[in-house]
Image (cartoon, rainbow, N blue to C red; front, side, top):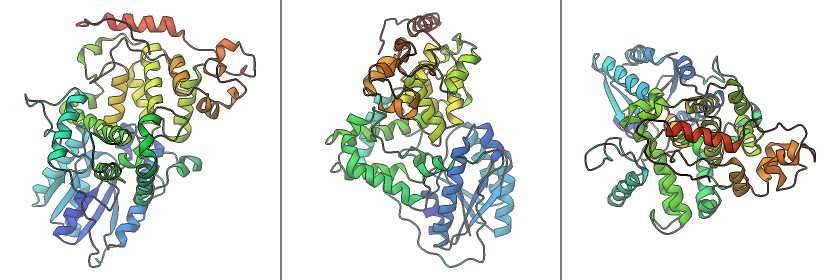
Amino acid sequence: MQLIWLRSDLRQHDNTALAAAAARGPTVAVYLLSPQQWLEHDDAPCKVDFWLRNLSELSNSLAALNIPLLIRTAAHWDQAPAELLKLCRQLKIAAVHVNEEYGVHESRRDAAVAEALKAEGIDFHSHLDQLLFKPGTVLTKTDSYFKVFSQFRKVCYERLHRSMPALIKAPGKQSALNIDSDPVPDSVKGFATPSQSLRDLWPAGEKEARRRLDTFTDAQIDYYQSERDFPAKPGTSQLSAYLAAGVISPRQCLHAALRSNQGEFESGKVGAVTWINELLWREFYKHILVGYPRVSRHRAFRPETEALAWRDAPEDLAAWQEARTGLPIIDAAMRQLLETGWMHNRLRMIVAMFLTKNLLIDWREGERFFMRHLIDGDLAANNGGWQWSSSTGTDSAPYFRIFNPLSQSEKFDSEGLFIKHWLPELASLNKKQVHNPADVGGLFGAADYPSPIVNLSTSRQRALAAFKNLPSRTSSGGDDE
């Protein structure tokens, strides 16, 4: 008997470990609830709820194949080896199959499980699944991990030209086993159930994930490059939560994008090429996680930036977290996050740069807050994005590039539609006033909106000074977008 241990791969189709297990013999699936570990990892309640809802959908589709889904608890990953060993003994399991996960804790957990099983003569098979390329196989000429995305992407393209990762056939129906599936819990202690309105934005299941992918690649991908930076437009795929939970695979996404672009990924439709680039950014940050483990230990990718004199400013941090900075584009973005579990990617950069540059607050505070609220929270992508914005990371923005939230707002939400949707208290302002109500002086119905908590110009100078004082800092200049 084979056991597939499900984690961030909550789907039946194109699931490497599931297909490998089913090909070897009768298969049982197990999922471990690990609430203590999830709390330590700052996993958001809406994300845990999304996992459970997808697990429930997957249980139904596996039942149609006569594959039972068992639910066990290992509150902390330290308990995973004993819990899985116990189950393997009960069911007389010959081999356990998993899809690889990345990050220091994940790697240690899997190594400990493999060791415990092998001591009992049980095989442990780990499969490449949530990435197109195995970390350690896309390397520089000196056999080190890439630090610059454009160079990484070039090698990925060369590899894709030679061989495209194939989609994996879903397993067929197996003979019924005398094992009942366990009910999937509706909630887990320590994680509040999100609002119904948030849940409605993110329906569970592979059908919904594939529907979103098909809708995007059939119709919207052509406009992706030109519309993805405008938060009031439906310019993005809305697939990130499904990718993070493994309800859809990057291979399925890549194949769909190529189908929309006559098989091209470097030429043809600029929208499809841009979106494939985003899939490779996701790939890049996971490779960084493996190649430079310090980033999963809350360390800066650029060690010299550990010496930055971040401000201890709890009141400013709270104003940012609670969407009351007095800068509409920042507050609208934070409200979107708090109410939907998601934030538009352009806005993620704007609010991150505001926190780390204008408020000079440690990027780790922002990274943690995002993880605690994002339905698509992913350690590699979230950490990569925060370190990029704070100029502490790989391929990061030069420290002197500091987005001006007002000009970003005017550029990417010129009519103020996004701002007015999330800040209805500013609905009466015209499209010029809405970006900076402080200029209006409380007139025109903006009286209940706070004044800006920081002066953009002086705070920018403060950030430049802090970065210039770092050791081994040679470049200088001014690039205020």
